[in-house]
Amino acid sequence: MDAKTNTKTAQLTIGDKNWSLPVYPGTIGPDVIDIGKLYSQTGMFTYDPGFTSTGSCESKITFIDGDEGVLLYRGYPIEQLAEHGDFLETCYLLLYGELPTAAQKADFDYRVTRHTMVHEQMMRFFQGFRRDAHPMAVMVASVGALSAFYHDSTDISDPHQRMVASMRMIAKLPTISAMAFKYSIGQPFVYPKNDLDYASNFLRMCFAVPCEEYKVNPVLSTAMDRIFILHADHEQNASTSTVRLAGSSGANPFACIAAGIACLWGPAHGGANEAALKMLTEIGKPERIPEFVARAKDPNDSFRLMGFGHRVYKHYDPRAKIMQRTCHEVLKEMNIKDDLLDVAVELERIALHDEYFIEKKLYPNVDYYSGITLRAMGFPTTMFTVLFALARTVGWIAQWKEMIEDPHQKIGRPRQLYTGATRRDYMPITRRK
Ligand code: SDX
Image (tube, rainbow, N blue to C red; front, side, top):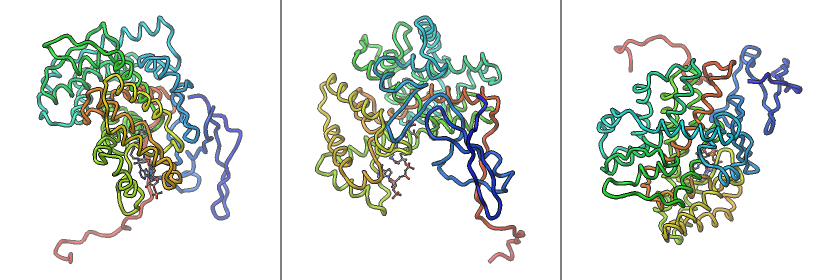
């Protein structure tokens, strides 16, 4: 990492003692206060459950401005990348920091395409799951199991092995995701085809059957590719922080990405697209929206409007606007009149005018429209977070790579505020009441 320059300091006064803490500026976004020596100087820890005000690392990959609704991948606005590029171009950008030249793009596409097959024995690995296993459970297990099949790319100290492991995961996640889907519906696995682009290859592996030729619908492959771009990375979110923490112990990259998939599964995070569609289905029709809005506002009801709100975006999630447009394109192409879209649009309209949601700064996030779109494309609800994990794998790898290559990185090991029992002696069971 570049040497941090601090021109400012923060003053901390506790009782009659005063400390100066270095302040570092970012190229954009908030400055940070370096508290790395706080404990050794003051004997105190900071306290920030949920890390609402804590910067865990220095990064050059993704920048989010929650107030302005800005999302930049290596400085490029998400709107422009989604409009003009494709997902593998975004993968190259996130991994290497610059948009590829035509020659670099061709080479990168070639290398990814030729890593898309998985070890044939993984087929048997799948057979161990019940057919009704949630595809995310299959993903966590299968990606973790890659370290059992690809020993030659688990030495994280070797840059070549790090690169091979990265390419393997970017290339194989679509194949594994499609296998999880096919296994869940009892259809045969479909091998990747090297003459298809990334998104088209994935759609074919999901929806082709041996009995007939599968023709990729370009509207759907474009939508799929754009959805992958929107989900590729997102700064230090929960699953990315999980990958960084796992990687800081020196765990192999496959295990770190499997940990990220496990974290993403939660309904507060990547599981929200599945939860949002279930919520819209439960609401069922616009007339029932007020009942659910009232529940979301009721402090005694744990119900939340899934697909709304975000830790960082406090005006709107720029991905949600692109997702909404993509949703309309797919529904039009598939000639689907989905009542849930009517519910979603009406719920968004009501929420955006309701004092509670305005005051709490709750707006649709990327997960709000993705569920309706993916269902229209033919994916079952249980596959929604799988697609999120597929796309986010490149972001996790880019962040993991940045951490591994940081000469100052050390194992992550937070401390705590202890409020448990003070020291006490063991009580024999005969004397316990
Ligand atoms: C993703 O981090 C990332 O970048 C994640 C992500 C990525 O790309 O990696 O963007 C992907 O995970 C998007 C978020 C998907 N999750 C959901 O849609 C689930 C529903 N949303 C909430 O669970 C919630 O909004 C979070 C988890 C997303 C954010 O929670 P925060 O920032 O911790 O905020 P909070 O829970 O403290 O809520 C602030 C207030 C609370 O009220 P008070 O306690 O202050 O009275 O807003 C309320 C909450 O009750 N609130 C909601 C709400 N979300 C927050 N009320 C109703 N419905 C909601 N959805």
